[in-house]
Length: 272
Image (cartoon, rainbow, N blue to C red; front, side):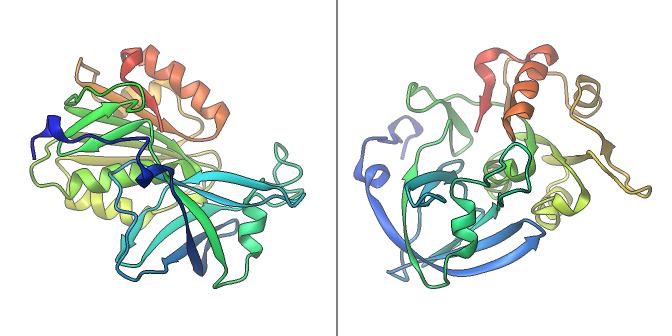
């Protein structure tokens, strides 16, 4: 199929229809995160979405009201998919004294419970070496030679999905550089998977880590993302460089500004 004929209909039933899955596993990743496994009723079914699309999970907040939150899966096979989720428990995070709207419910949901989800279109669409930036507003395919990625904490999931998809496509030579920020080394998600992709695809993908708090033997970067840090690891931007980001709100605000200072065109900066 010709690229220009590949169209995502954001109003189609594929994206608007809600459906049920079952929570079958919840395995700890670290002190505040789990890898959740959700199974379809039909063991042949898949989410079947393009890279960098996500889902909405519907559940209950502390008041018993129905709420929804967006999450990105990192793996799928026939009949099931996996999503890492960080839990915001009450009285732990100063900015969320009451805990998260949805994650305390997800942490305590009984295994084999059914819950409602829906597929969603993200801010970026990738297909066969080309991108559509903001596909709800724009239908033009573009080719980028370099993708810069800056992520914080759980914001790694859409970036990982894109990185893996590009690395798995032998016809795609897009270069990618990831800067991944976390509080501590224990907070890094998908460390093994990211390092394996970087080792296997050295010419195409490199990953750098920065930590707020690190041990003496830490060999990566230290502290918040800065322009100096970006300049030391990212190639100079060109017309065909795109910068993507995903992290906590204060970090996103900082990174948007840093990308512009770094020289990226505003229309080529995308928050997942």
